[in-house]
Length: 408
Image 1 (cartoon, rainbow, N blue to C red):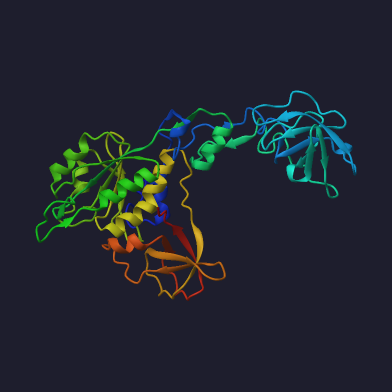
Image 2: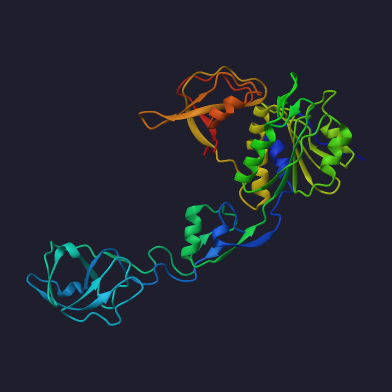
């Protein structure tokens, strides 16, 4: 009998690692929310139109509704009423009649033209028009936006302001959406103190959990920052043991040094490691697994640059999958503004700034210092430039793959 060979855990490619993380990630649950609270949520059911929009032929201008066949040089029309938004003229337009009409109002039956008010003159109940040849109809046809039965928003769509407007136009007061993934964030390290504290000479302010919590919220999750823990195996295990979360994100203690205790601590909680390390720069020590009770754990390096790059590459798609959305990263193309040397054996994601040149091209300039500890570089970056493993030197003008970073 041939013995099965265990799948490797270390030095996985970015795609291999992400595939393992997403292997059993699916929508966590469904809840109903009010339309006004739908921003950023992911639809758990499609929105299909119940009726046409607009539900009637509507005027696109202020003017007069008439029958086109009645127009002739010198023709005089009898003003017989008015049609305003929410107050339709109740009768058809007969020959020689004109109905005063306003933008958005229903066009009366039998009328097939709205003459704009600038081309009209009224004297009592008599209206005359000054027109060029073949005037525009100025009528928005019923169903011109969408028709009954049209799929307006598909399941898995993340709702922004414009999509919320479409849902409102379809008459939806409540929306079926995916439950937000609950994400607990734990920073570890003897060197960390919270902002506002007085650090010892050999300590630094903890910053990673704040940026990660903000990203989790922006990406549709619910973030809970846990109290940072020192490099203490029992303390780390206790911090994680009772927290209610769909995903636990640890920051620091991800490597294999004497003080990297996160994986050993979580082993006491039944950690099943799925990803041991990743051939990526920065962020090689990044790991992923599940605890004995099923909770997922994403372990990020302590260096802020590494943690934030790997959050974009792995945390972002994982949260999307847990919300039932498409986990594909929104890659785009950019043009290098400066040369880059040949890349090494690991896939490299360079923090960069984008600008549009006179020809309309998106130019990307990687920052010269890509040290993974630098928070300032990330604060100025608005993109990550992908350099495949083993890539040859790149000259200015070459097209590269770019992951835009959302900046407020």
